[in-house]
Length: 310
Image (cartoon, rainbow, N blue to C red; front, side):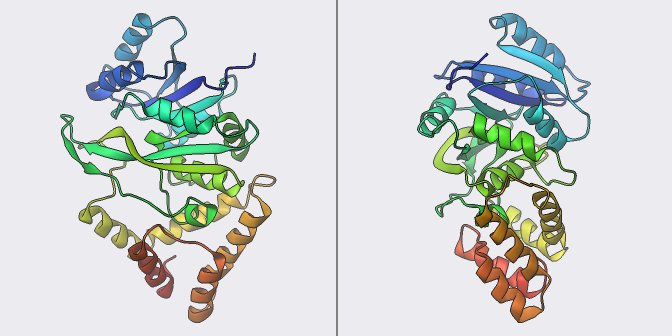
């Protein structure tokens, strides 16, 4: 049965999230856009997570919250499994982490933009975030990005946290076709690459619609602090960035019929430049059209290419 274009299926992955889960579920229930259903998937929690989910399922109207079992293979496989799950259909889809808090207009803003796109155009919406501590005290914001989202950016940088992402059914079909390749770094970076690479529309909203909780058990933390920036540079020099690019290139080259001709050209120019000598490598990287969002980021990219760390 066809679903309304404004219906949102929220993919919520949980694992030992009892401490903060209720606050997230309450923020979903408080959304000004009320046409939503939560598909929760638990990856083997040993705390009270499943009890909390069951309690909310009992409180909410029938069908509002569906509880599933995850693959038990980490958060990337968990979100990809939900994304690719058969039998879940809606006009729109959102990713949700178990420990954040959504602002009341989070879904409304996303839906408003996504409904401006035709049903056949893959479209992805993401936003900046407001960071909070374990007690919901505000601590700052994620980085502000101003350059346009594009495949050339997605190849080397993810601008949208999965906890902010909402995408339409055409984009979801692309992600299902792309499947669940091994070795991906994060599900959200993969979504940005696939949708932008297929020529889809991507919007980065500077309005922080998610209160992104930072605490001791975060799998991935916010990346705006100087410590986080230093940590990224360390990863580059340790070769982690190059290994990530290797994994992404393997996965992207397997997307027959998904990437546009323009994106395939960018992909191959980027891949070829990485295997060249010093000067051809730098020239090839420039000609490929890849870029990061800031001048400092692009300087860092050039330095990494200089030492063959891209």
